[in-house]
Image (cartoon, rainbow, N blue to C red; front, side, top):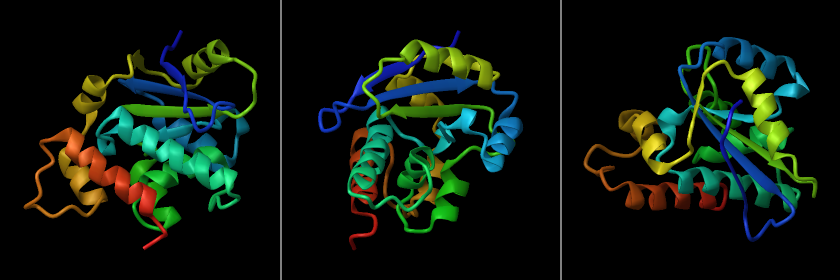
Length: 186
C-alpha cells in the first residue's frame, strides 16, 4: 500500500491535501495516457519532482490552485490540472503542464490530491494510488524531494539566470513561491 502525507491548510480547513512521492515508476506513459483520455480515476496532480525544490514549493502551488478555485478564477478544467499549472510562473497552461507534469519517461512522481469534501478518506487515496502508480512510495520529506530535484531543470523551467545560486533551497523556494503567487498579477 502506498503512503504519503495528508494535511490541511489553515486557510482551507475543509480541504484535505494528500501528497505522495514515488521513485522507480514504471508506468508513467500509461498514467499520462489515462490523464489525456480524461479518465476520472486519475484525478490527481501528477508532477515531475525534478522541478520541485521542497514541500513548501508544493504547498505554494496547491495554495495558489485552491485560491484560484475559491475565487472562480481557475484557468484549467480540474483542480488537479490547476495544481500542475500553478507550478509554472507564466500564464501559458500548455507550457506549465509540459514542464511540470508527468512525461512518458518519468521515473519518479510527486502526486497531489485535494479532497474538498468534509469526508476523511486518506486511506482510500493511498490504496487507489497504490493501484495506479507502479513504483516505490517514499516518505514526503524535504530531503527526499531534494534527492529527486534537478537544479538545472528548475533553473530552466523558472528561467533563473546562471549567476543566481540555487544552493540555498530555502531562499530559492521563497523566490519561486513568490513567482507562483504573483503569476498573472504583473
